[in-house]
Structures are given as C-alpha cells and as structure tokens.
Length: 114
Image (tube, rainbow, N blue to C red):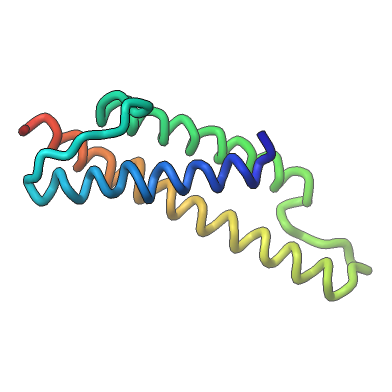
C-alpha cells in the first residue's frame, strides 16, 4: 500500500472508528467496535503498530534528507519542501505521543471499568 494511502487509512480508522468508540465509552454508553477491530485492546494495538511504523519511516526520511538540512545551493522550493517535511514530522510525532501516551491508556482503563 502506498504510504499516503496507508496514512489516510490509519487516520480514517483512528478518527472515524476508534476515536468515536472512545468518546462513546467515556460518555458511558455501550459502544461496539466494528468486527475488524475486535476489541478496544486490539484496536489500540493496531494503531500503536501503525505509529511505530510511521516513526520508523520518519527516521528513514530524516536520514535521506540530511536532517531536513538542504544543500547550500538549494533553491527556495527545496528549502520550503524541507521546512514542510520537518513540520510534518513534528506534527506526526505530536499525534503519536497524544495517542500512545494519553488517549489510548485512558481508553483501555475506561474499557476495563465497563
């Protein structure tokens, strides 16, 4: 699967399925995850595996583009691209941190209580 398609699929699963489930769980409703997710632990595990994979891809990208440091003679477009790639990495790391370290543990604890 193309990396952009994989990222789009991940965001869809997270935002439309898992986040909706977590919001309903925290509202003390009795939500049901789609069969493809199994249970909340499986859904969280799948999302965390995606996050790990994305982290690996970001590390490889950073190596390829010399830590987002363009060549001295790079044109403005190249410099803008490197700047945008660095911003994308920061935002994805923030997304991964919020999911893995804040939201997912809270959701697993809420699921245990029900």
